[in-house]
Image 1 (cartoon, rainbow, N blue to C red):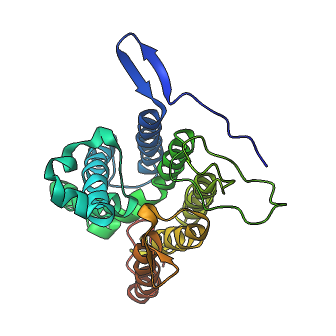
Image 2 (image 1 turned 135 degrees about the vertical axis):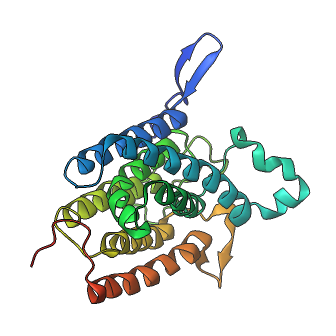
Image 3 (image 1 turned 60 degrees about the horizontal axis):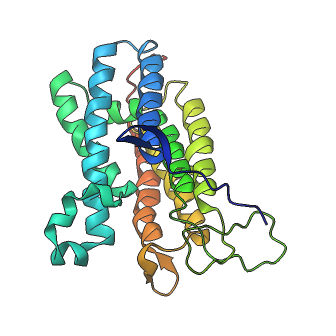
Length: 268
């Protein structure tokens, strides 16, 4: 069994101002997305640094607003009905990837109108820049000892941990690290490689949907279900929300190669 590194959730304290690790992870997520998008823009015609800066700004709004609204609707709707003000109490915690994902897609509609870009061309451009942000987010969950995994039933399993925030003090899977690796680092490598060559419009977005959806669906088997809710006896809400991503991604991938619309470096 591994020992949980009990890290102070406050990364930096300057008098009354305290910077928490989770907030710092969000900052790193947006900085990495900006850096990666800037790198990609230099290798694409019709893209520039101003567009990238606006893209990250619109995306950040979508992540924060959509992530919070999604969490409230998907995981705490009854609490919202009891206390609607809770929606705005973001300091109490609670963000949803699927809500943030929807928020970003909606925010990109406004960005595309401003710069006259096709929606899927924009999503294909930004998709490879997203997984590093997911990685930092999961590392923030790990440092905060939140969203930990299910109980380890194999006594010989070497990666189990006891999280200080777990009142049961059970040995659990460090599922945040599993997600940081699979939804973050591995998905980033796959998408960066796949998007390094001309692909038909929608194909990169399709790989993101399939890759994230599959990784999330599998790792949810090792993660304690949010609010302890399971569907049909075994499926978590995270799996339920990820399954459509996989199916839509498969259809989009097929459709992209049927249409064969290329947005850069078209080869005859």
